[in-house]
Image (cartoon, rainbow, N blue to C red; front, side):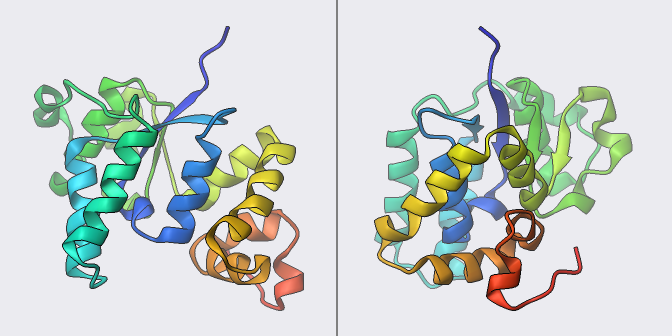
Amino acid sequence: MKRRYAAVLDACVLVPMPLADTLLRLAEPPALFEARWTDDILTEVTRTLEGRFGKSPEQARYREAAMREFFPDALVHDYAGLVPEMRNHPKDRHVLAAAVACQANYLVTFNLRDFPVKAVDEFQVAVVGPSTFLKELWALDQTVVGARLQQQPAAIGISSDHLLSRLAKLVPGFVKVMGVEQSLGRGCDC
């Protein structure tokens, strides 16, 4: 059996709750991809939720604990020795090292400029934004993606329109591909 795509999710895509929730739902069985991250990435998520988004330490740690519990195989180990070999932006070398260590197909981040092609090309990992990654998953299996996006708003107690409007701010290209951009009454320049 062929291995599913593996994707290292950078902290910046795990912080915004509607996006993180969407990505993680697509990594739940039957999963469209294997979500991967490191202790460093989870620590950054927790720190950002507390420092920039005003979450209490308990709220921030709750999200980290839930991710660890529900995705026990997502944690990448033995990547620290690769960090010095990475040539991308120093603050994100640990993220690329994790992708290389777990042989990820994708590294999903908003910080594309921190991963220039010349720094990642030799490692055969595609560094993509979350909208591009979600569009890839949509192309892979529209039925599963559509079903998960229908379940998500009910599970978190919001309307579908509210979820899609929040996602449209974060991943407009994905929302547009799904064909709901028009119903939201906004254009997309991506």
